[in-house]
Image 1 (spheres, rainbow, N blue to C red):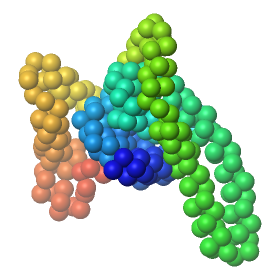
Image 2 (cartoon, rainbow, N blue to C red):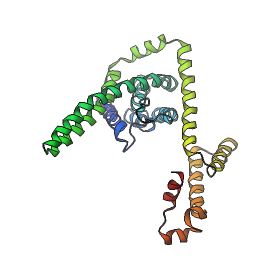
Image 3 (cartoon, rainbow, N blue to C red):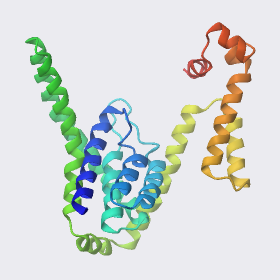
Image 4 (cartoon, rainbow, N blue to C red):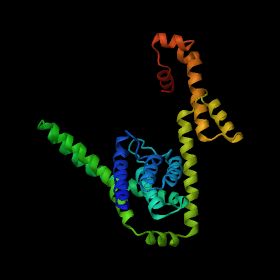
Length: 266
C-alpha cells in the first residue's frame, strides 16, 4: 500500500507541475495538491489544513509580465509530503513551504529556458508540415514541467524521516519563527492584492458586511460562502444597472448579468 501511495503522490506532483503552466484544473494550487496528497497517503485532514493555510499565502503569488511568482506547485507538494509522509507538523511545513517556493521558482525559470529550444524544434517541425512533430514538442515541454515537481518530490520521499526530523531539530527557533511570521505577512499581502483588483464602491459594502458577519457571528466558512453567493445573485437579479430594470427584462433582451459585471470592471 505504501508503494501505491508513493506512486500516487508522484502522479499528483507530476500533474501539479504541468498545471503550473496549463492552469486548466488548478492542480498546482496548494488547496488542491495538498488535499489530494493527503487523501492518497491516508491523511486527508492534515492535507486540507495545510492546503488551506498555504492557499492563503499563495493568493498573492501571480506572474505579471516577465516577473515570475514563487512556485506554489512545489511548495504545496513538498510541504504536504513532509506532513503526510514524514510526520512534520503543519506549522513547521508552512515555514518550509516558503523556501521551497523560491527553489521551485528557480527550477521553473531553468525549465522554461530549456523549452525555448523545444519551441525552436516545434518551429522546424511546422516548417516541414509535421503536425505530429509540433504536438510532440508541446507534450514534451509539458512533461518537463511535470518532472520539475515530480523529481524533487521523489527525492523528498526518498529521504528518511529520521533525517528530516534531525534537520528540523537543527533549525534554530528564531529562523522558524521568522519564516512563520513572514508567511503571515504574505497572507496579508495576498488579501490586499486581491482586494485591490476588486476595489469598487459597489463592492466595499459587501466586503464590510462579510467582515462583520465573520467577526460577530458563529457562522462557518461554508455558511458565509453560501450567504455571499445568495447576496451576489440577488444583487445581480435586482440591480437595474445589470438587467435593465428587472430580471425578466434582462432575459428578454438577451443580456447576461454576469457578463455585464465583468465588463463593468474592465
